[in-house]
Image (tube, rainbow, N blue to C red; front, side, top):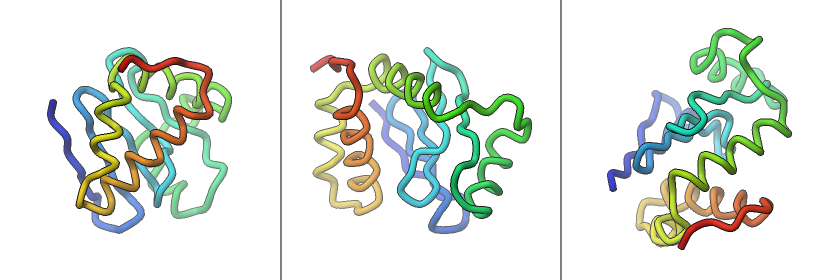
Amino acid sequence: MTIQLLNFGTPNKNKVCVGDVAFFFSYSTIVAFHSPATGLVCSENVWSNTTGKFLNEIEPDKKKRVGSDEFEKKLRIAIYTGITKKNLEVLALSDNREIKGHATGLLKALEKSSFEIKK
């Protein structure tokens, strides 16, 4: 499994790829993701102007962005179908502070979901 952390020039714009699933982070919040199961899913901007600019880079068409309920539902599908809990737990132990933080955030998102993730 390939794991990558890509920075888009500023500390608040990052992309974490775990296998075939890509998560776009604004600061420590997942604002968009792409998986084979869901395609690109981009949240409506409910944060700051800075996050809004990043969302415009990811998905310029605001009509294609989704509300928080649909975003969370599709995020659970992307995580459930693309990443195992064990992979995330290993990433959460990383020496890289950013990868560790993002993996921890994904684990917290899973705790809020009603899905049981594969071991």
